[in-house]
Image: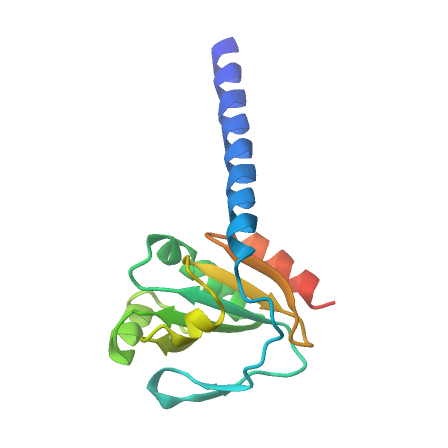
Length: 164
């Protein structure tokens, strides 16, 4: 019994240290992101659907790619957030609109997606690591930015906080 308790403590300490380490790396990587005011008002989504970014709501902009393993893990988290908050996702160099739509359909995802096939938008935000999440308040100012995987609860807490 003593060995099991010791082993359990070691596992807990390991996960705490790894969580702290991952957050430090995320903060370091997010320092290079464009911190300017959100200046996009309208953008074309997949299949030429026009999307207007609301001026009075918090919005999450999520950069991802179909070829990114962490993005695949985080996709369901983004889906859940998009059911309660404004979310705009930008698919970086992930193929044609049809390729991205197929990926969304296969994974039962229906959030707003911009196909950034040439990488223009991604470079405008200075994103170089995927996934990257940027949360803007209702005034278009960055409240949070995160590089790498984020849990659903972490995303909900950030969106909730940014809404004040």
